[in-house]
Length: 361
Ligand SMILES: O=C(O)C(=O)C[C@@H](O)[C@H](O)[C@H](O)COP(=O)(O)O
Image (cartoon, rainbow, N blue to C red; front, side):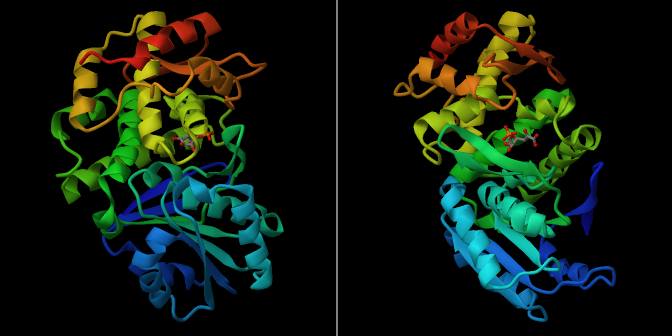
């Protein structure tokens, strides 16, 4: 059983990464140090149809119930969050109950926030089913969306464990692979040039990923993220580096309408933009044409959709959680693997944004 140990100031926990990882869940919950009164599985329609009965059958010795929410970002609304809380109360979950988040990043964010706020916090376990969730399931960021911004209502709340069953990835549609792989590339760009070079050299299609490639880049990405979260759990410093590409990425998601453009594909556009800004501001030496050619080969859109107004995107970026007093702050790169934080003026932001609406590749 492959295991990554996550250590944070508020909690240490294991990340199990293996085929059939959920087969270990029952013994984990039966651990003598744990008392589990009831289990609530929160999942979405797509994942629930595929895996809910398998998970419930593996937990037959426990008192288990489930609650199914809409797919993707549609689940991250206050109404759905509140309905989860109401269901938990109706099912009489107590402080020894566990919430299991079975799904992608959106389910993990929602279920984690329900766990963080139900009775001021009950234990929860992440059971990610997407490549994207290798990032969102680790580190304790849980949240729901607000019409004025992504993840604007949330908490830092660490899980008891993460069970990443690689078999769940077999049913992953290409758009989800593309969304999740953007965060893998991010981990390489901000922290590990040799990892980025390995990705660039070995991953030329997201439709022919091998189990070995997936296992390697998930573990590497989780280790990169784990090292940052260990040092800066509440994002007072270096954890902001994990937001590379998200300043514009979240603005695109919110302005287009949550779920219209996948999180990872929006972040990928945001990373191209942040690399462009880095070359303008820090003299980053990086072959953008080669990078854009690789992204196009992988099927990424690398321009801002023409129907999105740059001034409205700027207004959204001013709302970003890293922005203070409406001044937009970006994660830029001085070199690949050497991130920095910089506040930029509106004029430069808009000037560089204009270049991102067309690509003559
Ligand atoms: O864990 C972090 O810190 C990150 O920034 C990881 C991001 O990839 C992730 O999408 C996160 O949910 C975005 O963070 P937010 O604080 O901008 O909501």
